[in-house]
Amino acid sequence: MKVFNKLFADIQESYSELVYKVSWPTRTQLVNSAMIVLVASIILSLIIWGVDEVINFIMETIYGLHK
Image (tube, rainbow, N blue to C red; front, top):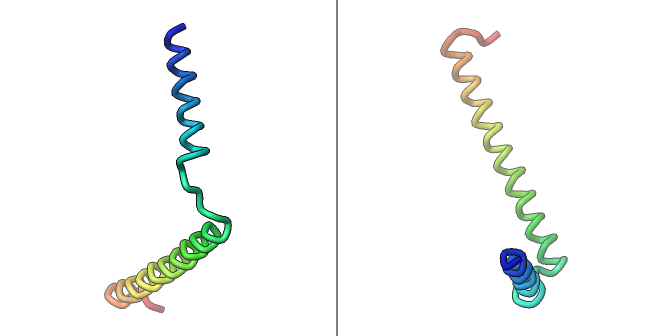
């Protein structure tokens, strides 16, 4: 029974900390952060795609596979 009391106390403490001590971002801050991540992801994927295309062109040219 002692273990369950300790577990319950830990859960209560975690809940209290999440509700009263953690500073959650506002909706605007969350949307802005999500947009930054989205734009950065798109830019990074375009860079990787471009590098892949350049390497593919070089390899096709080297091996004579370019049609």
